[in-house]
Length: 482
Image (tube, rainbow, N blue to C red; front, side, top):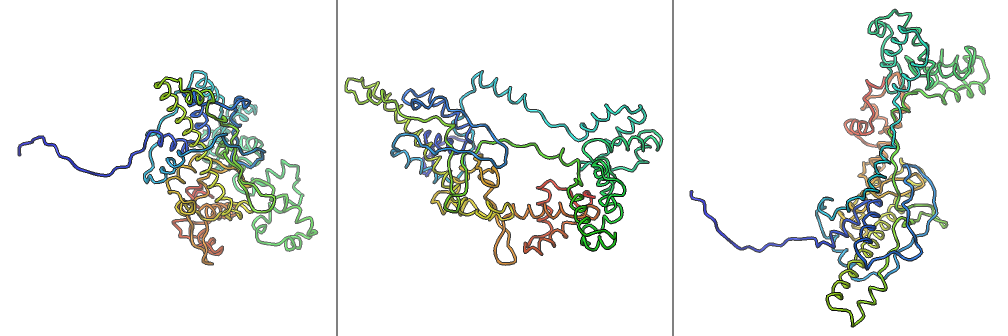
């Protein structure tokens, strides 16, 4: 068939974002530090836009880890009256498809000084030492003979993430090419390292190392309980143990309390993820009259206004027509930016206020009381599009009585409960983590056993769901938790 060129006309409807709408959408979507840089860039580019006199250089608050803290601040807005640009920003809620960040106006290129500060900050971040590196450093300072030191290196190499020795001594002796007596000598030295209890071969040895390090002798009640009655500690009552040992119940209770204060996984502290530092934009806190209230943090953004001089020039009949067009465009652009910031703050505040009402139990009792919330249901409640909620909660953080969280954290689907209610997936994950934390380390629970335990708590989940949540929590299966 012969190819040929042709032209035809057709009509179709398309939705396109005006550049200013894209800018407002970017203001809503970007996290606070990036927003601050964008505002600074606009101040430099638009002569009609200026900071309020007396505010000085607003400093970005120090980022903080995802833990609870307190601060006092006053919620303030820019000093101007919003105009009809609010209606243009509201039109963004009708856009059904999220736009990628690279489709929006990007951030200005960093200045050499800003880039130098950033690089200095990155270079200043140091990763905490791993457990193996921590033990190796102590081994190098131990003064062991070369053969024992070599055995010590193999011992440290076989210490798992919990701090337990995961290989038999005869295997270590064979791999290291040394006598068993040398391995015994090296093990005794490594077990004196920090953290206390490291390189233990089982739970009993791990606890005994810690007790003896704390000064408990072989005749102490805590040591006797661990040596001879460890299995019974989780089942028998203090009264039963006191009767068997022929000692007062109070002494048994005190010994049990001491044992419970020990760390069964001394190496776990080295495998904990590093703290993430963020800058909260809002705080949800208990209101004086009951319930919870929202307070926005705005001190990091400059206080903006339109230049009175430029407004005066625009109103002056003597101003040339070309200059008037330029002034009108810059003033219009500046007002749109200020409106965008106000709309952004209002949207985030509304979302935080809805969370404050819905999650009172979480703020008072913790993650086990986190209620399911969806962006769709909140969007319906607020009268906006779901994508608006999605953009507003991404990368935005809020301080609460339970710590600092990303707003997105509060939006989870729910799982059915036996009483007909529902529970958030985050609360179920927490329940799974608690069950695994409390299990007998010698007989770890299978995923099905965990699902059965959850069922007794009124939480209906399948075994595969438990497996998925366990993997998301970074917890190994039962056969690897021994």
